[in-house]
Every structure is written in C-alpha cells, then in structure tokens.
Amino acid sequence: MLAQMSSRQLSEWQAFWEVEPWGAYREDWRIACLLAYLANMFRSSDHAAVLPSEFLTILDPTGETEPPLSPAEQATTAFEENWQAMLGE
Image 1 (cartoon, helix red, strand yellow):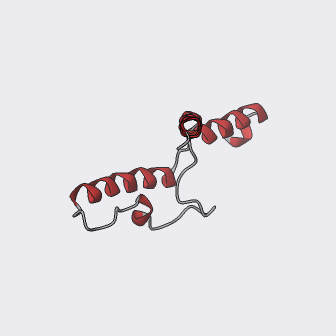
Image 2 (image 1 turned 90 degrees about the vertical axis):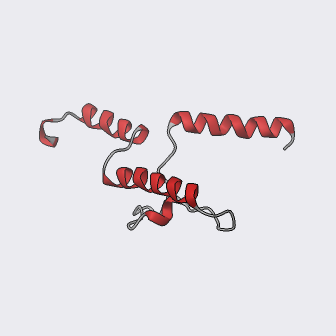
C-alpha cells in the first residue's frame, strides 16, 4: 500500500493521525479511561482518585501518559486559561 501511495497522500494521512490518532495505544487509553471512571465511581471518599494511566500496562514510548489533545481540546484549554487569567484566578 505504501508503495502505491503518493507523498501528498502520506502527508495527509500523517496530518490526520496527528488530529485523530488510532491504533492499539489509543484503544488501550480509551479502555483505561473507562476503567478509571468505573473505579472512581465505586471508590470510597477516603481513597485518592484513580488515574487512567494506572490501568495501562505499556506506556507510550515517547514517555507521555496521555494522548495529545485534539485541536478542539487545545482551543478549549486555551479559552479556559485566558478566562481564568482575565478573572484573576
């Protein structure tokens, strides 16, 4: 497949992966988030919250424990930070 793909097509797929990653690590992350949600839903109030990274057996080779934020998530985070700065929080 790669031999039949043009440079432009490969670049487009790479850009798409940057926005919407796929693959085993991403699926593992989704399941870890679900497991953390369930664990936190049933934990007692005197225990610390469980993080999704606690359910991952193999961490991302880059050392990151969370997948990169999507452009929409980045925009939301930037808006929240600016809003808090404007309010002086």
